[in-house]
Length: 152
Image 1 (cartoon, rainbow, N blue to C red):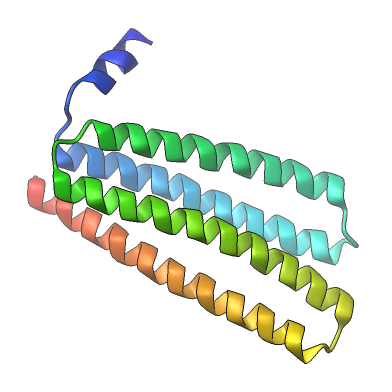
Image 2 (image 1 turned 60 degrees about the vertical axis):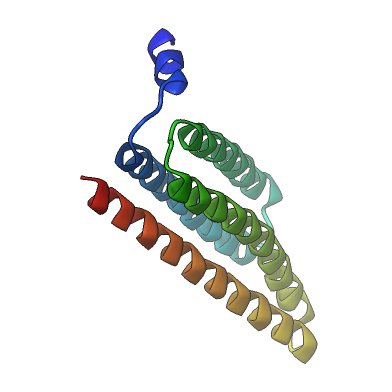
């Protein structure tokens, strides 16, 4: 505990913080995969809400924990450029979570309503938005990776 507090109080190199953020982002990406898999199972299993709620609760806790850890890492860097990249990543991840929820709800509505063209368009539009956000996240992560490489 003391070591953690000591580490949080002292500045870290940009490369150290960047590497930590990249590792935390991997954890977040894995949780998104699990969440999406669980949602597919939820739709396929006739809406087993209890099972799905457990996965959503777990994912929510992990997303919150990862976000807090990333913000703590950001506080330890004196690299303003890296701090801006981290801020951008956090904003994009917030958007990603919101659109993921909307997309999952739209998938359920589309399944319930069948061939409703408007609902299908909504699903496709949200999927496109998720793809766009994911692309922006990948770009920020690439910038952070370059930061790690350049600072070594």
